[in-house]
Amino acid sequence: MYTPKGKGSETMNKRIEKKLETIAKEHLFMETLETRNSDGLDFHEVSVWGVKKALEMAYELGRAERQKE
View 1 (cartoon, rainbow, N blue to C red):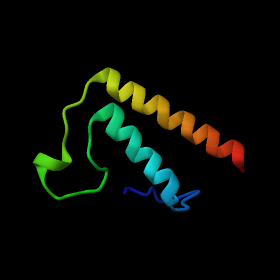
View 2: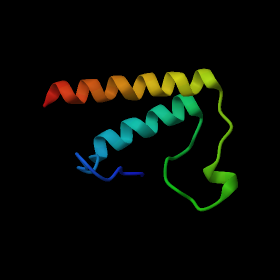
View 3: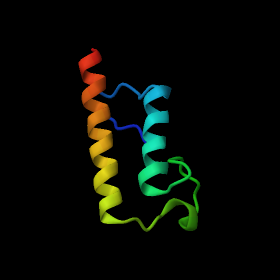
View 4: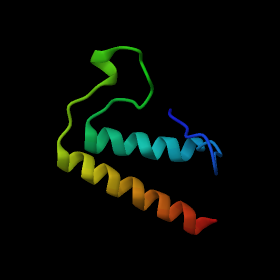
């Protein structure tokens, strides 16, 4: 899974990775977020509303995680 570098670069824990993968499966119809080094597997055509919903869900996940700290 992609892990951003730089300020606040703690790696995502497995629980959050699993939740993000669930969001991708449910709203973007992607089997995995792992790089598979194949254009046919790594690039997807997705709807705008699917992307919007996935971003909303990920945002809410981040807010919920922040409140736990």
